[in-house]
Length: 184
Image (cartoon, rainbow, N blue to C red; front, side):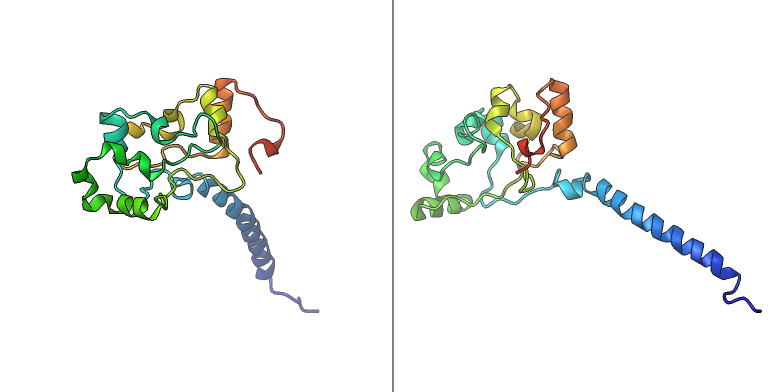
């Protein structure tokens, strides 16, 4: 009786099974590696802002403390963004009349805050509380980098779970046993 399948069919079947196994293992590993790259985390990516605000000038040269604008950093989960009225006292009429500050004037006139674009973004399911970290001595620079030297702020830390866990380990900070501490 003749063979139902040719001899090469066994080799082809083995090759197909090996290819399926490689794809089944390779895709998850590739995705796990990709989510840690700057492309996925947003690291070093410039984020356009509605007003050309220079942290290098304000926090660097003028030495304005971070807490002047980010007023909630010591007492709430969010660092907060300043109301437009916070910007105005320092700028004279010449600066306020400039083209660059047109969004500031519009915000003041309309009573609507400036729609800043978030630079440091965590996934929606992650809960991060600025206040507890600041109260425990974590400085702004440890997560946000030397903002005082950045004309345009970029995210310098990967802000991944392993990065946070490594920081907690290095500081001998409490290691939480439930996922709901950080994940909501």
